[in-house]
Length: 258
Picture 1 (tube, rainbow, N blue to C red):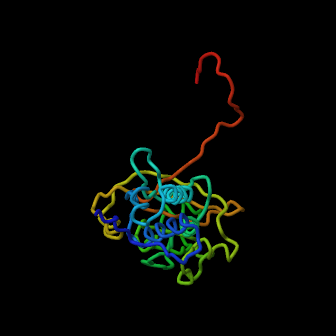
Picture 2: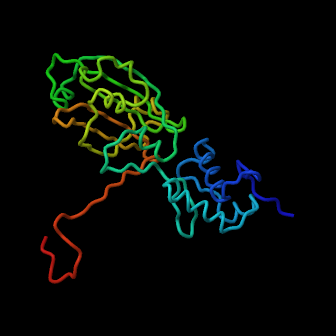
Picture 3: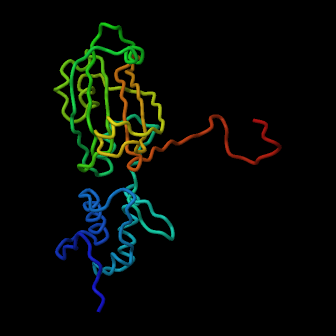
């Protein structure tokens, strides 16, 4: 007799939660525990049904629920895969905020939190004079204990006079003082990990990364942050919605001379 495939969980027979939600929750927990990683295939509907003693309809609903939450990409004819972190480019939010909304547990490993003199490029980006000091915040960003990016933030010292007071979220700290940025300009490019960044992230030299340089601004127009992030490309998917102002869909006539 063929044995059912092994899973990192079993259903609770006394739990009143609908079966598909139990399966969805257990799969989510398995992802957060590192049993499944980004781009790994989840068990199929048939595998889940056989291993857990449920119908394929129930297994299908569980996987659809995960897909609806953005945790899973469903590829027709292939399977269900753990989705990378989808980061919308049209909304200004913090790393911790984005991960928490998807059910992940964000955390940071601080490398340094210091006051320092400004460098020339920082003075230009933040509109500072050469004599002004900045808070320099260097950390590894993580979700569910997995390192996914290296980040260096530079903020005028008048907004963060005591860098060690920041615990997890820099944006939360700035918001408490009324200095959270309301808009930002971000520049993206693909880079290969330098020796220093590779060592910090624990990846091979030359590993593919997304590099993001963000300048955040207050309502007054003053620059409040300069953040450079090196993100592991396999963990992130940056999404932007684009529209054309002043045009509506309609019949197309003639040639396009743009």
